[in-house]
Structure formats: structure tokens, C-alpha cells
Amino acid sequence: MKTIINGNIDEFIQWHDTDGNIINASDGGIICVNGVYHWYGLQLRDLPVASKGAGGQTTLTGVAMYASTDLVTWKYEGIVLACRNAPGDPLCGPMRFERPKILYNERTGKYVLWCHYVCAPGDHGTTPGTAEAGVAVCDTVNGHYEWLGTSRPIDDKGLVRDSTVYQDEDGSAYFIYDRMVGEDRCLHIVRLSEDYLSFTDDWKRLDAQYLREAAAVVKNGKYYYMVTSGLTGWEFNRAKYFRSECLFGPWEDMGDPCIGDDAHNTFRSQTTYIFKPEGSDTCIHMAERHNTQSFLKCSYIWLPIEFTPDGQLELRYRNKWDIADV
Ligand code: GAL
Image (cartoon, rainbow, N blue to C red; front, side, top):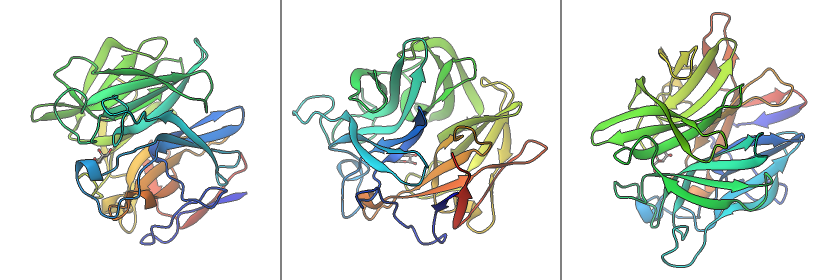
């Protein structure tokens, strides 16, 4: 047994890698390859005070990756999707590969990374380059991902904000994103092409998920579940989850999944990703505690998801918990 240590609810403890450095992998995810878990996310900068744009959650380096066989001990593997620090280059920092997510495509044998791309200086905006989907590809999970560029799913009117991906049991994969057209803001789901490198015309507006972001999807039994946050930027807010028997809906609003103290602000965190360790029945909800005083010092909380017999999804805070051997 290994123990996941979240610390006391108000503690905001740091997680460290095997070199003793703070794990710096913001809003990413986990992918398991041949029994090795790879945790990746945006490598943030050490900024003393959060400021909008050039100050907030941007990177000069790229997407970092860590490896572990037990989900507790993490070895730094380096930058897998790198910034290119030549002025004018689309990957020149400070920029964002926000909420990066990696899938393995069995047909092509390639690893595909999707993110919400924001060019330098890293401000969310409405002009091209500040609200796009970005994609990169690699032959190995922890190699150097090749940047393939940006686009907007569905049509160019819809700005891309928070995004995630979901791979279904039949190998089809989906890009799920907070789509903004003027004041209208709603999560949408778009099926990816067979090679996962582009969008298809098969998409759906998820009406139940109006004004939601930070989505993460998991399937358990007959239901797909989507956990989301409200739109309060760095401020924590009440999570809400939805369930459906079909990815394209209709999705049912199931309310707040969190139970106990600080449920109303997702235990002082925001959803990042959900995954099921290999051979385990327990899904892990990864969430992030953005530290607006110093983005480098971000903190994470990982909690086991409890599914009730009647198909509800529940999260309870735990200072620490044992993870079954994986
Ligand atoms: C959060 C969102 C993050 C980031 C931030 C502001 O609420 O989930 O991905 O966009 O707002 O930059």
C-alpha cells in the first residue's frame, strides 16, 4: 500500500519529485504506459504575485512530465512539449498550453496532446491565437512532442477556453471544451478524427453544462460522468457534475459531488482530471489548488471517487488515503 497525502484541508501542502523539487505540472493529466504512470502538466513560473496575462499561469518552458510506478513517487522526466523562445514564434513564452491532455492512438501508435493554446503574453482573449485548440504528437509518451498547430472546433466564431479529452471504450476520442460566442458560453463535445489529430463534424452542444469549465469525464457502469467547475477564474467555487448514458447527452445535472467541510468550494480546489489506475476499481479525482501568490507553488489534492449503487458520484475530503498496489 502507498499513501496519497493531501494534508489538512487548509494546508495547501506541496508535492515533491524524487529530486526534492515541487511537482510543477499544472492542470494536466496522467497516462499509463507499460505499467509506468506519466503525470504531465504546464510548467509554471515562479511569480511572486498573480497578475492577469503576463503574470498568471503562463510558461516559458512548456509541458513537464513525471514518471511513477506507484502513483506516489514521481521522477522528473523533463519537458515534453517545449516552448521555442524565439520572439514571434507561436510557441514563444510567456504563453500557455493550458489544461494539456494526452491520449494514445492505437491505430497510429502515436501519442496525441491537446490543449487550450494561448500565445504570448498569455492572456485569454478573443483574437486568433488567444482562444484556440492546440495539438502536438509524439512516437513515445515521454519524447519530444511535435507541435502541429492550432484551430477552432465547429467554427471560428467559437472561442476555445478550458478543454479536456475523453477516450471511449471503442477507441473513439472526444475534445470537450468551453465554447464562447459573445456572451453565450457552454460546454461542447466534438468527436476527433480517427488519428485524433483533427476535429470531425460530429459535435454536440451540451445544454445542461452552461457556464461550466474545468471538465473531466469518467465512465462507471452505464453512466458517463462529467465533473465541472463554475467560472470564477482562480477563485475556488462549487463543483457540479452531470451524468449521461451517452456522451452526446442528454446530460443530467446531478449537483455538487463534494460532501463535508468546504464542499461548497470543491475542498478549496478545482477539478483537473479523472483516471482509473490499471487493475484498480477506484477512480481518482485530481484537483488543483492554484496558488495565486506564487504559481510555482501549486498544490494538488487527489481523492478517490465513490459511486453509489444508484449511480451518484461522491467526493469526500481525506487528509490521506491508501492507494491499492498498482
Ligand atoms: C480557471 C480555468 C483555468 C484558467 C483560469 C484563468 O478557472 O479553469 O484553466 O483558464 O481560470 O486563467
